[in-house]
Length: 357
Image 1: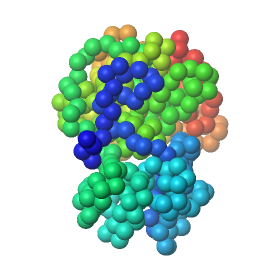
Image 2 (image 1 turned 30 degrees about the vertical axis):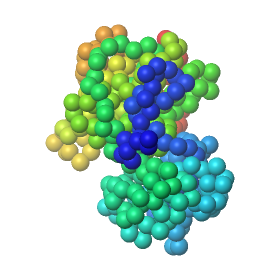
Image 3 (image 1 turned 90 degrees about the vertical axis):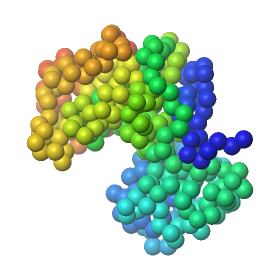
């Protein structure tokens, strides 16, 4: 029997590193990236993120008349994409209001009839598109809204799990926690280390192919969801867990705390933008110093893993020139006594070594 469209999960009681995490949304790869008629690359960040971080999972792109955003992938319609190996059409753009435009319906219907799952991170449920749920059922494919978590998430147990975990935490939102986790996971794999990126947000789920959007989980089950995202693994396996929110954020600290407790990290990577002085859009809330952030994150993480340690600090230096970036990294190292790096700009060898120490 097919599982409900909104709760596509993989039940994995063993939870080893060779299988998907227990009870998480699992996507069928590879993807046909749907760009609609988008003309602004800024509205196609999901598609560009997939192209950059999961190129092997992108079979091609599909644009509607008037669309000018170009990922540099081959143009395919759903039938040709399925023949080329694609198994999901993934909506890679964000239209106005995060809603699915009515004139997209024929394309979405064509995709499910061609045998492709539909994957969306938009606010409009795919099921609400007229005729789409019936067409998907008839074709034996799935409608997957990645922002809607599984219905059967458990309460956290607090039990220690095998394997190793590093959690990305931050002084604020939107400063590079996902990119830090992705970059570290890739760097570790390149060194022959058994490592996985574990997704906790919609774009991360699409890149990884599995995960849970924890900001959509009922509060009582956030820590349980985090346990599901990073299950038992081999002793030498590392999970690099995407962070959400910040303990210093007046709106999102609760999400951060639940994710931190459920992740039970062995190591923390503190992410920060050296040019920020206040929480974005909350000017009455100044950001903490790096030492203050280290102290509070370690204190909170020790509830479920008393041995947790700070292993590195990741700085977003994209707005700094090379000299200023170098000084910001050096200053962070002096303050915290751990390697400082920019995941998009500097080598990661020292950061990986600190995690393994």
